[in-house]
Image 1 (cartoon, chains in turn yellow, green):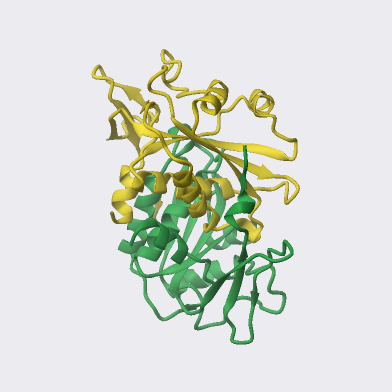
Image 2: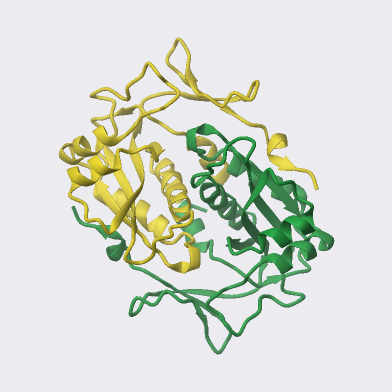
Amino acid sequence: MNLKDLVYKTRSYRRFEESHHIDIKTLEELVDLARMSASAANRQPLKYLLYNTTEFCDKVFPSIAWAAYLKEWEGPHKGERPSAYIIILGDKSITESFSVDHGIAAQSIMLGATEAGIGGCMIASIKREALRKDLNLPEKYEILLILALGKPAEKIVVDEIKDNDVKYWRDKNDNHHVPKRTLDELIIKA
Amino acid sequence: MNLKDLVYKTRSYRRFEESHHIDIKTLEELVDLARMSASAANRQPLKYLLYNTTEFCDKVFPSIAWAAYLKEWEGPHKGERPSAYIIILGDKSITESFSVDHGIAAQSIMLGATEAGIGGCMIASIKREALRKDLNLPEKYEILLILALGKPAEKIVVDEIKDNDVKYWRDKNDNHHVPKRTLDELIIKA
């Protein structure tokens, strides 16, 4: 797949076939993509937790705030939850400043997930102290992002933005619509 | 090219064939990859400045701090400088919080650059106020990242990290070496 197709196919999925197992080797290969991506001053301060079992996925799930714009929806119900997670941590023993390293890393991972036939969502809205406790995570790690992964079980439609309204929404067939700004709006003419 | 090859080939290049022209359409296609990448709460607050002329490249170049670890090197000399730039701005009229959107966007762009046969470097060490003045940039835009682009004219070698030393360096043949942490070091065992 060329990169444009890969990027266009990489949507933020929040409902999955939970029974679909993702093996650890796949997760490790995704982290390898992040490992070989750029890092500010080449410090490489990111660390990764990989989970693909019900036991651990059940520990991560309650700490995630899902889809802020969908007020009626409390997140994926049992059966459509992610079947794996990659948690991106910042190792404060290396630096206290992670710049946008986790954004760079997360994009490599999510593109890799699409290529591997899975999908997911980058989540920054996290109950961090609860998760730290549930995972027994040492203080030296800052919880930066959760990447929820699984086999997507929802259709996502990209729409052109109207009236500057960026809120995603679901139609009566339960398809998820995402308004995107046009290229013209993003490029400032010199 | 599969994504792994693309990611591995996407190194941070700082010396280029400056005579190699990059057309605006190529830069626009790269921004389109960023446009279709994830954005926190789908706010899409990033804007882009595209430069591919000597006149504007000469305005951007002096505001960049090049390669902090190469103390003896003041940056690429005339003839090996970038022939294009994409400057990523945060539009503060949309939000004051850009999260890691610019990291996500920058990675999409740099992967796209590799696929298009060019390369470059993400730069966050910027003389921001000087650049704002030189470009006559309104206060509502925050300067987030400069992506320097061109046809690479240096060889980059990825080495396994030794003694936890992350500093890149150049060998006597002027090849640029980048120490990378191993996958084992990055993955925390549950």
